[in-house]
Image 1 (cartoon, protein in one colour):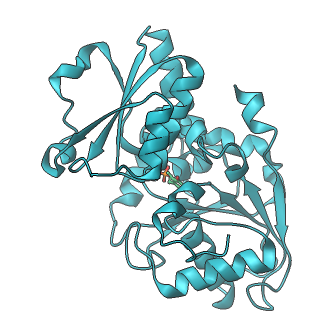
Image 2: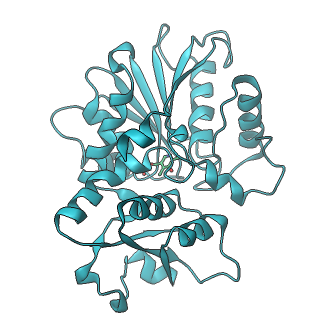
Length: 295
Ligand SMILES: *Cc1c(COP(=O)(O)O)cnc(C)c1O
């Protein structure tokens, strides 16, 4: 499964000067090219959970997410490949028409169970699913196993070439994995949630050893989780036109938006050797009105 997915990863260059004259060439690790469904960081984060499920001989996987969740879709796709049964517990009322994300998950064999927002907050697993017989993966793949898997992202580049690595952060699991895999690099996480100041604590809980060379930026959420500004959409279209790199409006659009700002404001040191993790998520753009994005 690994090799099949990973031989499509490339490292693409953003030429100097796209984000102002101060910006040198930037490398982009294109995890979005792994697979349209198991996108970006999700296979890395799921791998050790699924290995444990197999070791425990549990063949029914349960996880949680919203209607456009990359994690739910990736879980469905991984389970199908591994011959496991999957159930997605979805936040909110069942809609008259499923999102394209959930339709794809159902096509991959996932069973969907909709629960109300209060129960969702408690991560309630309906008893008819026999939770004791299932393997439950936390929402977003947060946890030590997720971080252990995410650490392998840097196996796909020569990390010593870089002084800084930047990624988008939701639960912070990928960020923690990158920190654990780093030597001397500074890892920069762009929070895509508004005012989620507990993120640093969540990340630290998954960081092993003494490594602390990271920072989290909180001002590039463009309105909040899964929200977007006109400025963000214009930026994403412009980035695609100038570099050919498509981004998603929930995570990687905000990541590159933040990077552009950091160069324009000269926040990064001169001579920075930056690796940007393109963590995928492009399928989520289907939730936007047709024609919003040019790609
Ligand atoms: C899930 C996801 C993230 C966030 O990963 P965390 O480990 O939860 O911080 C970032 N980018 C994309 C495209 C994602 O789907």
